[in-house]
Length: 416
Image (cartoon, rainbow, N blue to C red; front, top):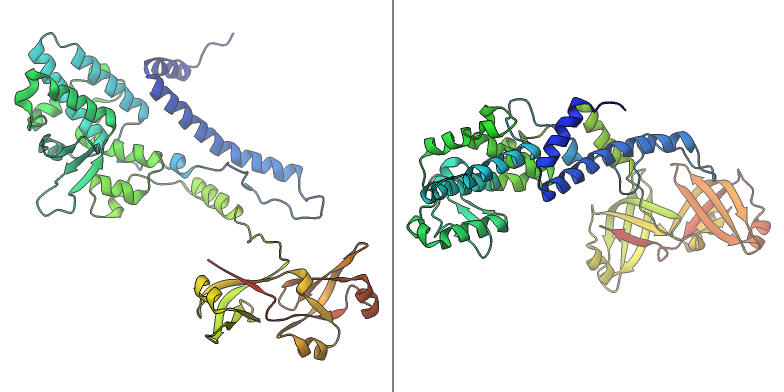
């Protein structure tokens, strides 16, 4: 039997010290990382096994996303060099060290003093506040136990004044501590400790933790909370508000992405983008170039990227509901049965505002109808559904030039 790798032994040792909740969160984090890595592998495998679909579709792009999978940006970022912080395992180690230190007190006064330091540590750990902000807290004024928030004033006139949500268990521990009659004199000044004393007591935990002593300070705890929240998917502006940063640039300094991971994330997002799905076979995307009429019916002209114009008629109520105005991005869709065909331009012009010359690329039929597919000069694919008799009477063949036309009432407009 192969002996365990030293790293495995270290992980087993650390896992044995974790609480069930912390262990569950670690497993979830590991699953997210593995899932993000596996998505790229599964996509590559799918390319190899299905270079083209049975119906003649195109091959999948590299790293084509799988449903529910993909690289997790919140897991892939790294903390830039120079930002000192504790990861989740190290924070758990420190929390357990503080618990053991407080519980090991040999007298009631010592237990009270250590519990105060421990509660102050928990406030630093979960609020992301600066040490000076926590030391200035008045627990009778700044803690809202019903809403589980702490009000941090920040320097006078500073934009850092803010409310921070705290875990319910932390507020419950503070309430329980203050409810002890022996702690009554501490009301209003629970966190009013000497700054140097607090820093020394954090450093005293060094023998109980497995990371460098220099990481035992309030600034590192503040950085750690920021990284922890970003890993959980909390948006940068929200973390900025919690920390009281005046600029988002400061908060952005906690995360960066390698070039490889940046490409993976972008590739996943871009490759999963799909055109708008609709039962209509003919879709003209563009912007509104003209709106005419303000009574019952309104004529809306849509100009596509290639410069083609599509004339539509909708009700004024629909115009208002869709927010139709010049310059708005819209899509005009036309179902295949509403598209007519003609080899004579005059006939196409006679009864329809929209008529476009194209070349037939496919004709597919069954016992009921025939699907005629063609390509316009700008590459737009048009599809018409007509009867077998019409195909015979017009003598339609692949390669023929025909006019695809439809009335202005046929298109349906879609807008964001």
